[in-house]
Image (tube, rainbow, N blue to C red; front, side):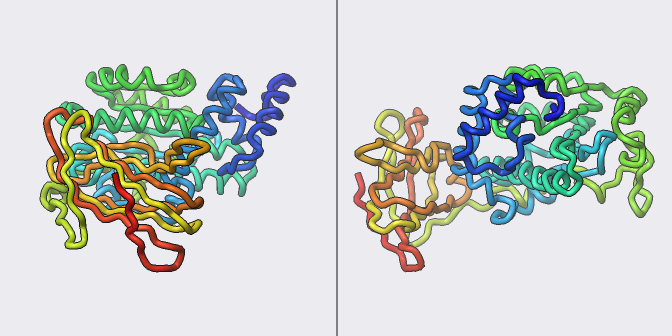
Length: 397
């Protein structure tokens, strides 16, 4: 929806929404950006505000604002995850494509932690959004802040989709995208969809906003049908010959692999199971029982503002729940790193936060979700004053 399409009532809602969230640090200061949140919540201003503030909290907790500048994706994802930009559609929106059916998601998810995989999804979405915003500022056209996406499902296999982590991360990715990137898509073309896709789509559908569903066009393997649909909205010169257009690579390849990664089987040498984490000499060790009572809290007193609380840990026996929070006598508990299950049995987990306030910080390891398996935890946690050495001053519990 464009600003020019708003009636007087909607303009007043947008004005009030802008006033309500003027305290927020927005990635895009324009009214067009705020309009996306209102559209996503059918102009219910209370729900739109709730959604936006929740998204800003998610961005802060996951370091999303500067993820493109400060994070480098693991090599295996960069090499084997399929995504690329073809050009622009007839409406001025960038066109992105993924050979989704060709991807070895099963192999990728056995070669990186779930945390890094989800971080990569945020990284790529932010990278695409930055490019769209820059193009929008350059041209003055808001259409550049929405994209057209082509998902080629050719060769989608049951082996890939029945691997539990593939479905779990797919659902989580869908929820995150819907809650944090409203109205990011102008059109979604799903082509070469096998019968298996219907099952997957029905699982995903409850988590999709109706506006997203309305933007989807799903086609089977009839190339004549889906190629015609693509050309209704995308000029032939913006589509590879393989997809019904006229574009070819410099070497004449009709699929244009120079434009986007085509996906392939991930070599077993990348699998994390080949290289279990090794404990460091300076790490402490504790055993955490399974089930009720299976948790450990480490409490740290921070006396200097902007000190850095950092951690490094690994486990034996499986993953572990991890959470970091600030405990204030006046305001209670404030999550700084929300609870998530960390695959620290596959790769050493490292991280840090800046302690902007003095007081008590708590790091919690949680194994209560595990019914049978106790975990051996090896860890090192320290508080570093700004531009100084480390102070591993644990109070414990």
